[in-house]
Image 1 (spheres, one colour):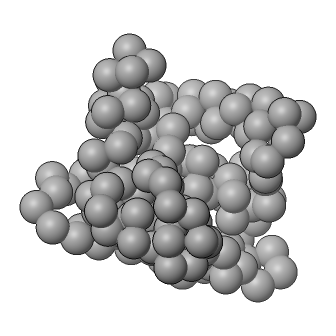
Image 2: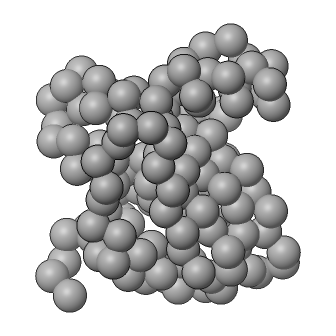
Length: 139
């Protein structure tokens, strides 16, 4: 089950459409859908988590906590909408495009993809692009 939570005054997403897409992404990776929660928040909320759990004193757009069990994906994915919308401007893409990329980035982390090395980051970016195409296909 995919859950959506909003911390603060944050616009709600089209949860049904995003849930269907995420389910398709998970299936395309030969994984099973468990309990996945997306928590949308602001920069300060995510900075606090980044400091507390990762010992990083930096702003970020996403933090994923992976609680997967074998092939079943479970986890909490925190996303700063402020950071996502700022990055959309920076990269000259729409807010929904950037939000979709960050959402699928979190799911790909739960699938086991990393992005620490250049090679891992390149594979992650390719997977994001591949999965974004699934979102833009009318269902």
